[in-house]
Image (cartoon, rainbow, N blue to C red):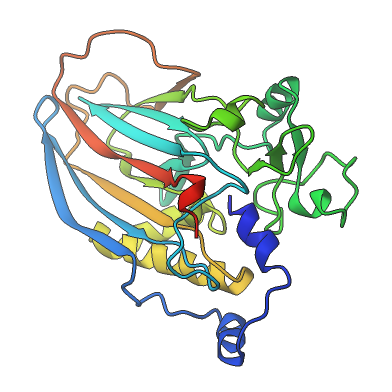
Length: 320
């Protein structure tokens, strides 16, 4: 959801004429390979249902103009913490576990249309259930402008995630200017845990059918300015998931620099579902179930594991 520290520090920062011109045009070309990691096209066969997963991934390091070698972070003042989303494929079933504001989306063919169906729900203060939960732990929920006195702190409505204008609600301790997290769940932050930031994942379960074409797992660096449907539309336009990853990451990067003076980290995995038929599938309709935490149970079918997507926050002392 962005970095409060970067927003505060860069509000009045000066830049060179060249940098200023770059920022106006949406600068620092994405083709710069610094911090870019792309995985080649890979295949995983699922023998129990005789279909194949074809996937690729890409990660682009966040860009901060004042500290170009700075590590990624999404908090104002941080300890070590991770947000993570992972997808487990067991036979013809997807299990999606999410902690934080990364997102998984599946593309569903519906007649002549290809629709985006969210497999996870961002865990942020925009959600009333998450807002109410962290308030019970004493968290102050305010945007950066509210904390800095530019907007009324008593207003506890920030629109929705599609229209917050780059200044989302964040969590703060009762009498301090930290941690400033824009998410309500993460792993490993002892400070944020005191105000209700928990590591309990939300789980969704989906039975795959031939109408499911591919799924996308991506960080909030992608979904900050792109909707789920936009991402699915872009991915649909490419036969090769590697090309789709490059296009989506590039557009995300461009939009960050058009609307902010920095970018967040951008990570995306696209997994195409090849050759799945109705044979052996228990239903022709998409079945989606959600629950707040993983339950026990053995899984003895052949499983294909999509690598987890994680955002590592450095120790505070490591931040430049």
